[in-house]
Amino acid sequence: MTKRITLEQIAAMTGGEVKGNPAIEVSSISDPRKFQPGSISPLWEKKLASSVREGTVLFTRRGWIKDGESGVELDEPRAGLIALLGCFDDAPPVTPGISDKAIVAESARLGNNIAVGAGSVIKEMAEIGDGTVIMENAVIGEHVEIGKNCIIEPGVVVYHHSKIGDDCVLHANAVIGCDGFGFLPDPKAGMIKIPQIGIVRLADGVEVGACTAVDRATFGETYIGPSTKIDSHVKIGHNCEIGAYTIIVAQSGIAGSSKIGDRVIMAAQSGMANHASVGDGCTVGGRAGVSSDIPAGSVVSGFPAQEHKKELRQQAAVRQLPEISRQLRELAKKVAVLEGEKG
Image: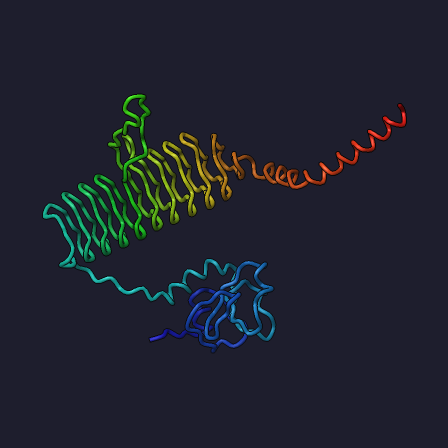
């Protein structure tokens, strides 16, 4: 059955204020640029306001809804969006229990209210905490520790001895604890593989996106700090140390033994060379390449990454090169004419 909710109810739930008709009902959420009748459209970017069609029901900042239109206004709509999305979340409930098509080793220790989907494999001496959900076709290796209230989505692989804290989310096909990429060139034998005998440890509240890989340490541990969120298609190399409340966005690559501080933002397709470090509170721009240590609080971009404003000035200068080149050619011609006249 489709859920329907009035603007008045949305305002009460999100701490907002109705503008227009509070009795309007909505049953879904839509992009403000592609508004669908019967929906409400979140809007917090001013640049998108010009593309909003007449009659769109907005969930937006105070003062942004035009006279004669209806919607809900808030001081910070992005924060209110969390409650709004939760209202329309129709994810199926998880039923505790172990599927008769799952393979669970007798020596595995399972907590209370565990859910294990069909095709999942839990190997020897794995320890799974209370309230954790392991979905279809996941593989949990030997001596793995997974804390309470975690969600392990379909196709996830957690290799042996990995340690996962409480309240972690591993999205579909994430791989935790695979071998670190270590080889030693040898003139006779070619590439000799370096054994990777360490582990991966995820602190409480870590989220790892779909198809992301976190390598085990060569020795010691690869560590990801509390409440850090890693997007899809990210690579974390062996022996990396990543702090708390950090965000690493899609297609980023963090080379082995790199160190990232607390509350860092690594934007999409950014990367770090091995043994480089990024200090607390830094922002690394999209496609930036960190090849040396970045001090705390910095905002960097470009390749190699440098102070963002300096990078912008250089980009602006590069765009002016065709005109500068043209001017130089004209000057060269004038100089040649003047020298001819003197001769």
